[in-house]
Amino acid sequence: MPRPWDPHRLPRRNHYQEGPDFLFVATEGGRPPRAGRRAGIASVVRRRRRALRRLEVGEPASAICAEVGCSRASLYRWRERYRAGGLAGLMDVPRRGRASEVPAVIERLVITVRLLTYWNSRRLAAEFSRRGIWPLYHGQVDRILDRAGTHRPSVRRQPGPRYERSAPNELWHIDLKGPFYFAGTHRRGNCHFAGLVDDHSRYLLGIRALPSREAQPILDLLGEAVELCGVPLELMSDNGTPFVAIVRSMLSRFQRTLEELAIHHIRTQIDTPWTNGKIEAFWRTLQAEVLDRQRLEDLMAAEAAVQAYAGYYNLHRLHGSLGWRTPAERFDGTPFLDRDLDHIPLLAGAAPFLNELIPVLP
Image (cartoon, rainbow, N blue to C red; front, top):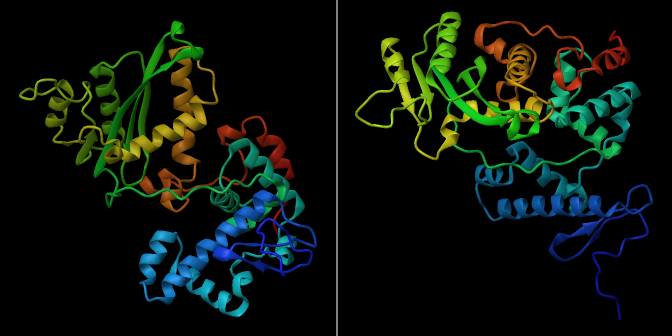
C-alpha cells in the first residue's frame, strides 16, 4: 500500500513533488532547501496557481492582477510557464548564469549598504544606477541579498486614496509633530518639529525645531518659504490649535495670515491623517533616518540635525514615488549630480571607505 503524501518529506532527487492544494517542495543542487525557503516557495506557487485558476474560469485579468499585485504581462507569463512545465514552471529559478554580470566588489558594496541603511532592493538598484556606481536592476539585488541571507520580502500594503497636484506651488502641506524628548528622557525637555512640503514634488520647503506649539514660529517658517519659493494656491493643514481657532466663528492668527496672502486654506477631516499624507510620509522618513539614529541633547542640536537633513532630502535623496528622482529635480529642475556614496547621512563615516571600492566603469 503506498504511503500517503507527506509535505514535510523531501524528495531525494532534483524534481518537484506535488501534493494537496498544489503544495510542493524542491531540492537545490541536490540538497533540500531551508525550511523558511521551502515555505516561501510553496506560498509563491500556491498564489500563482490560484491566480491562474481564476483566469481559466473567465475572471478579468485586471481584477486578478489588482488583487494579486502583479502586472498582466506577469500573469500571462505564469500561464505559459505552467503550460510548459506544470508547477515547476511557476517557481522563480535563480538565473545563476547571470551572476557573473555583477562583480564581487559590487555585491559586497550592495550588502554593506543594505546593512547600514536597510534599503529595499528597488531603492538599492536605483541608488547604484543613478549614482553611476554600477547599472543594477532590483531582481539582481534580490538575488544578491538572498544569497547573503539579508533578504526580507516586504508585505504589499494596500494603497490608500492618492492625489497629486500637477505643478509645484499648487498645494503645500504643513504640519506640527511632537513632542520629541531630548536625550531619551522628559527631564531634559522636548521640542516640536514644524514642516512644510510641496505636494507635486515632495520638496521640503522648510523645517524648524520649536520649543512650543505657538503660532508665531510657524508663521515665520511659512513666510520664509513664501519668500524663497513663491505663494502657493492652497495650503493644507490639520485641525490643530496652531492652525485653526477653537471657536468656529473666529479665525486663528494662522488663518488670517493665509487670507492676507490669498492662500486657500484646506483643513483635513478629523482623524484622517492620510489626507495630509505627503507631510505624514515625510515625518516617517525623518523618524527612521534621523530621530531614531541620533542622540539629540537640546533644541540647538535638534535644529542642526533637521537642517542638515533637509539639504540631503531635497538634493540627494532619491524618492520612489517620483520615479527615483530627487524632490529638487521635480520642483525646479535642479540636476542630480552625485556620483558616489557621499551626502548620505546613513552612510556617514563609511562613505570614504566604500567609495574606494567603487570600480571605474569603462
